[in-house]
Amino acid sequence: MKKILNCLLVSLCLCYSVVLFADDIVSPTVKELAEKQGQEEAVLKKLSEAQPTGITDEYNRATPRSSLLGLILAIKEKDYQRAANYLDLRNLPFTAEKELDGPQLARKLSIIGSRAMVIDLDSISDHPRGHKNDGLPVYRDRITTIKTRNGPVDILMQRVPRGDGEFIWKISNATVAQIPELDHEFGYGFIGDKLSLLFPQRVFLGFELWQVIMLAGIVMVGFIAAYILTTLAVKVLQKNQRFNKQRLQKFIVGPLRFLILVIFVRLTFDLISPSIAARAIFEARTLLIIAIYWVSLGVVDVVIYRLADHMRKNGQKDAVVLLKPASTGIKIIIALIAVISWLDNLGYEVTTIIAGLGVGGIAVALAAQKSLENLIGSIMIYASQPVRVGDFCQFGKYQGTVEEIGLRSTQLRTLARTIVHVPNALFASAEIENFTQRDKILYRTRLRLDYEVSPDRIRRVLEDIRRMIDEQDFIDEEDSRVRFLEFGEYAQELELFVYIKTRQFTEYLEYREQVNLLVRDIIESAGVKLIIPARTSYIKELPDDMNASEG
Image 1: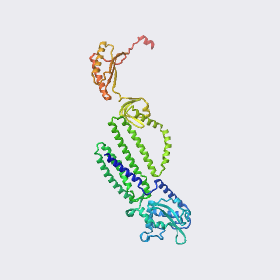
Image 2: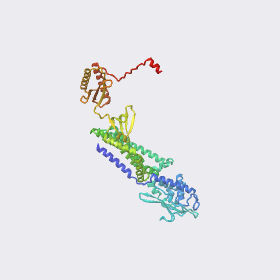
Image 3: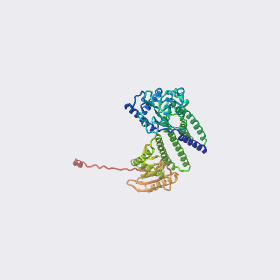
Image 4: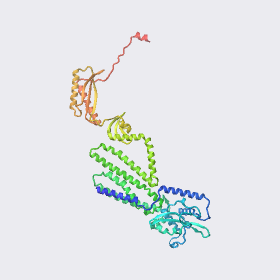
């Protein structure tokens, strides 16, 4: 069984390693894409407000930037006929007019751009002559560079004659010539091309409608595969009696199945030919982090459960109480790691965040001084164990059963069935009377006899009560006693001091009732009566002449 578990864990680790390191395309983060989008909107707004520069052109191709923005707008509107006017289709090495026309090339270029191009619009020249010191011919400007399997490929713009003696900027024919080859690597493929033309071209979070449908199909297949694998794993592992079947099934059917599904989707994600925006959202690894976090919590619960069971079998029941705060602390650390990893995948500077957390942690520690005191108090309670969960104790004016010892407070269930939350710092430093840890319970009372009772009858009562103490098995006769204590103000007082051998308060009440009835029988058989405190008031009536004089 251990071999099966080890193989399962190794397989999951290998799958996770493939997921982490199998991405060939380096895509920008969500943060970088958001910044690029904001930059693009700002440039478009600036361009719309600026005065035209250079020649007047129907498609605004006077400068590299204006021409590129015109192409981007045409592609966003899916107007590939118009977008073709921004491509230099002269002197192409393939028979474009027979295989691919201008609109088709523009569409494929838009697909390549959405999947592989990140363009900094601020770096694109807004001068009719373009950049002069970029190491390229004066009639060419570099838009961006794509990383391909065969090495980097420059996406260029070129200053070409319009036909009337003026020059305009278009996508270079050198770049247009590479569109078919780039389409093989970054295009949608045969199935994607057919589906993209079949479904409406609507985009949501970087996904086109056909990609969403394919992704839904992949998720469905992944769920079926995960369901089959986890069902087989449950059936195999449940044969081992050492595992808790319900807990094992909850772990495998829940977090482990979800993790397998997420890994399957990651391994097949490239089948839908995602765009840069979709890949950026995907590379945030949100679902993967959630899956690993969920699995980690399940592993912690399983390990804690197994450890607690092992401690109980070894007689270390008291140490089991320490496992809950330890489990809580581990889960908090896992949650922090998950959040930091997610923020790093989004593109935020994790080192800056950690440094900020360090500085902020000092301020929080000062502000949360009471919370830290309670945390230390909880550690002291776990270490010294003045009380345990289930103990009945007295704390200040409260009496109750300890229901939970948390990291901040200890919960007491009072006799009135209310819950009292006592801060651990106060609970650990105050006086606590633990009734559960006593080995026997004391019953102490006084028997008040009238002064008319003779000494012989008192001796008989004492002897009968002592005999009763010796005869009852539930009474500790060695420490129990009854004595003629004193001559009270209004009675002769006997003190009954009885230890009842039980730790349960309900049993104690039953035995106490028996003691009271037996003592009452002894007193009545001796012809003696118990008296209660009483006072007699005498009212003396004054003579009539004194009442008259006072009046």
